[in-house]
Length: 291
Image (cartoon, rainbow, N blue to C red; front, side, top):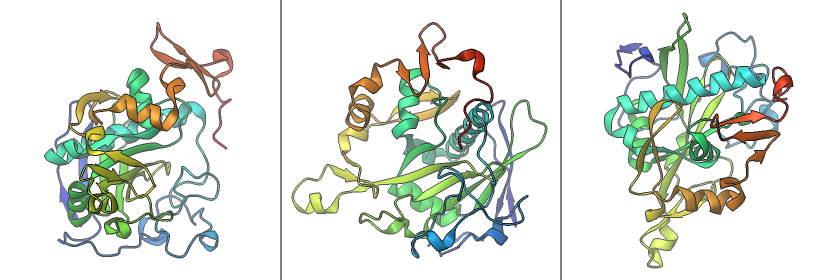
């Protein structure tokens, strides 16, 4: 194992990074089976027999937004919010600590929508999404695949571990329903994860003369000017990048109402507090299981 000390922003300290495999310029297939990454569980909560044979990432059998190698149950409402906040803060901090890599990953989808409203994760969300450039992901795949990053979070005595795992299919440019997620940042205590997808050139459109066309393997399409130049902001208190035409991207994906409607998923946006609050605040705790 190789240990590397990282210096991160004040208040959130990355203690050390353990590498499961030595650095290589080209990624090798490293199937992270249960035995190689197991923590507190005695068996994985995954139904592999029901999964496509070429699918790399496998979600839990109790909820699609948990990794069954590390979790055996969904978290409750308040508990989940706390862990998701730590998840995105540690990811952004780790990427920012790598210098240029931090400027080549940005918030997308529901996570970007949360940024739009109040720079926070929307409380009903159970997953997070970021996007990354091809060159940045190739660097992570070459030198940081299967690294475990340990953080000491404010208010917590014990360190927390997060694993960066790269899908070996990340190099493939075509649409791939089973391997549309190129990498994940995984909380090894709760099983929560961030989906990381790669923005790449749309080679079909480029061949046809549209050099600005971009695509993602999950069938999302963008123009280069939709994404770049990236805007700099903050999310959950940490420096973060967002796509240039964020409003257009969000309206295209979710509709105009998503940017103006203040009632959603049994929550109401309180403009004075700048926060999404449960419609029945008095019964919030324990009422919003993710099961």
